[in-house]
Image (cartoon, rainbow, N blue to C red; front, side, top):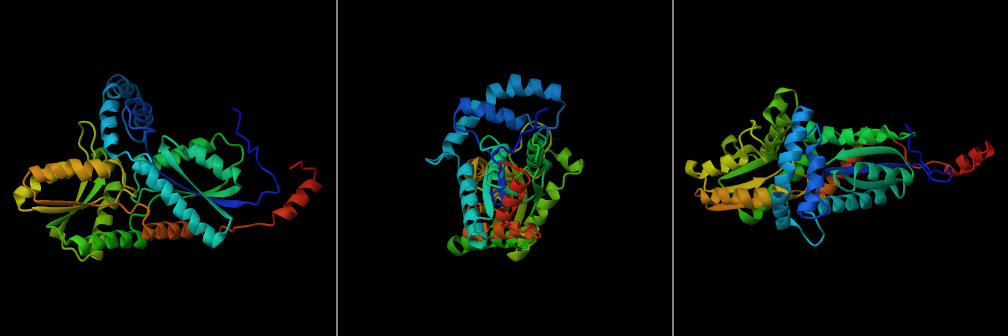
Length: 359
């Protein structure tokens, strides 16, 4: 095997710390042609779909990829903006906001990039950029507050796969979750409170998280527990009673049982139980995307209103709110403890050349 070399390396370049944030991913365009390779990459990940490989290859390539791309393209068209995919746009703005904060505190000693687990920019592309800028230490923060093997675990897999092909590996740290981080909880509680101050409260507040197959929980994935802990901590921060809020799970796929209660089925039943107004927040999503804008903001709104609901409000994700970026910045700095920034690269250059180095 031929390992990738760091061809741009020079002893003149100062060592830096690289910060990499990542999110799930997005197709390059809201078209059937763009959705097919994106969905194939996403659904081919064994962390996402834990089904025997041969069986799943047939289901994915013969059935799903011939049906779902066109359907998904129509959904993406409803949320696409002039800047492109909302998820890509928000993640880019988050990276820019973090870069500004690191620059203000550390000057040029910290460099920031963002990546998508599926699609572009890839994790490998972002790592290559950080290394080319002189990063010798890299911290990776997947923007999934609650750990799940299908998200955070898969992101680690992507980085590990990249590292297996490199000759020179940087020091590395990985933030696997922050579901109960005090600043994260405060950010979400403040966002909800600000919405209440402007619009008033509803009969019930729903915390809707992306679902996973129930057997993943039974096999030891902590995601379900971390989602419920996040909900409980936010509820405590807002002094909510147990009957004033609910945790549900959305976006199920396939026929097997997923984490319950299901968001869509819950919304269809609540009006008959006397709940006529709903407010919904998605604490598992750091950025608004198809699953929040279209699925929660539109599709599930229709379910609730058609079932007899009278008022429905979706509370946006934290996105690139200043409070959110401050929280992420603090989280990253806390996890960089012990890493020094800056070095005497000029002396290093002299010593290296004294030993015969050409760079």
